[in-house]
Length: 353
Image (cartoon, rainbow, N blue to C red; front, side):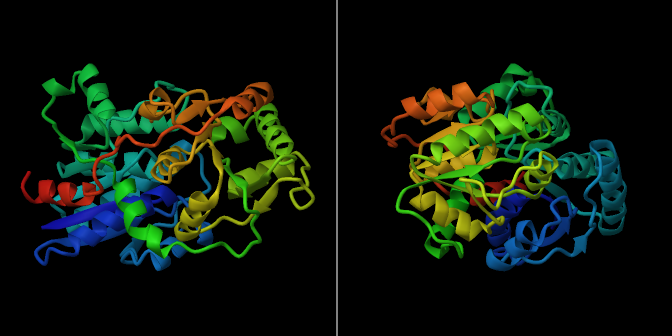
């Protein structure tokens, strides 16, 4: 059996790492990794393959820094060439990026089976490109690996019980990764306070709107008067702040360069609070028993909000500050994302569809 894995963005490298490790246990399966190049910063791409011992991609398409249409179209064109050459049994896609949709589309048009890891998630905001990507990918996939019961219910509400699709409760591969790699975590090469807030900011809905961006930055500045705010700075966010003539070097917020996954795990383990617009980091906060204030108006991880582990604060200064002042650390006793064996369930299902 040959499986072609499509990755392109930082969270997908983490997810693919645990599944690739499980695939490697089977001598009769060959995995070919295609890196679309969607994340092109070395700290957000090459570093992950090195530090997480992921097999280096057979193909690196180096497609980045384009608009959504151009990027997705170019990926579709180049992935199709690889699939025509390799003729795999499965194409495995992760998450909700342009790479995800392009990989699924290329495979489906060639009648190659598609498996979608992290299926069934919905934020119910169709203005988010990620929402469009995940809905379309789910609809054309042959097997849907769902991390939560909420994801399965979303699919049922959309009529997936009547589609020729296999729905599997796999648990969350990010939990597999956190459990495996936490013992390998390491501190970033920066001085850290005993108590600090870990903040990340990168989504277009925040960074592409100057008022939203600066409201969030103002809130983080205010919070930094009470405790240190550590913010690994995404390349897109850095560019947008430069456009606003914001001086990151002299900011009260402690901006640092993007960190690798093992350093991020260290920051998660040692911070007092997480503030983010990232989907993956919301879950990882839960894995490390840290409360999360989400800088969005909705989340695909609704069970975190419903169970009191996450608050949606959007991008308004007043709401962010009000949420910060009122948050309290809950009892992290519930299991929401499986038992840490998602990768085995995924690979076993691909072998025995």
